[in-house]
Image: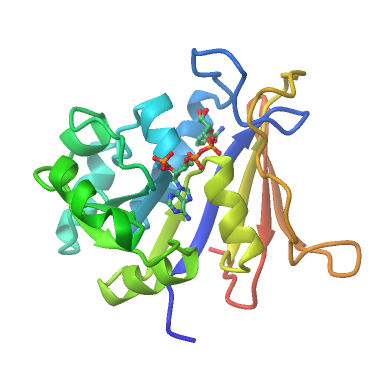
Length: 230
Ligand SMILES: NC(=O)c1ccc[n+]([C@@H]2O[C@H](COP(=O)([O-])OP(=O)(O)OC[C@H]3O[C@@H](n4cnc5c(N)ncnc54)[C@H](OP(=O)(O)O)[C@@H]3O)[C@@H](O)[C@H]2O)c1
């Protein structure tokens, strides 16, 4: 197996395990202190990945927000924010999305081999479109990112992407933030979908840390032997 980046999955969920509500407006799960923690984690990474639905629904910038953290990265010879990465089959992404228009940093789009030409037509002016295989697997994507120099990858959702990293046993660490509210609507997206997960009743994951952050709680799980407590 080729090398892959150390991979950290990060997300916020409701008490009943949802990533979002079923409504159009984005559900606020985190709080300011936790957003700042996430910003600090981002600043330690070489690349940040989100699925195409998250780009469309949430329009995230995926930048390091704090000036001091950006400056510290630049002083280390890095771009101010990590490389932005997304994956799509249909390539129906808006070139005006914040993912593409913000930040002096590289933007990578992985798509299936048969879609590369169409994706380049649409997105080639704002991102590097990469053939991720047929179908795109997170294994191949991870190995390609490693070959491009990424040693630490942060995966920020959504559920379809998290499910693939977890079921393929490609995650080294999970940061799960539980917000004190219920969604209570099965039309909403859960943290993960169905699948065979490497952690189950016969193989429990290791709980490495529990940290209250104002009204949310961070659960930090070690998911591989590569896990390092920082
Ligand atoms: N609470 C949190 O921390 C958090 C974080 C992130 C997102 N979210 C929420 O999660 C929701 C979105 O989650 P989601 O699970 O529906 O979607 P997602 O994981 O963000 O994106 C899924 C999409 O990514 C593309 N994709 C994923 N795997 C692929 C593969 N192997 N090959 C090709 N394309 C692939 C496809 O894009 P195409 O459809 O373009 O083909 C697919 O429809 C949003 O509502 C967002 O608000 C919450």
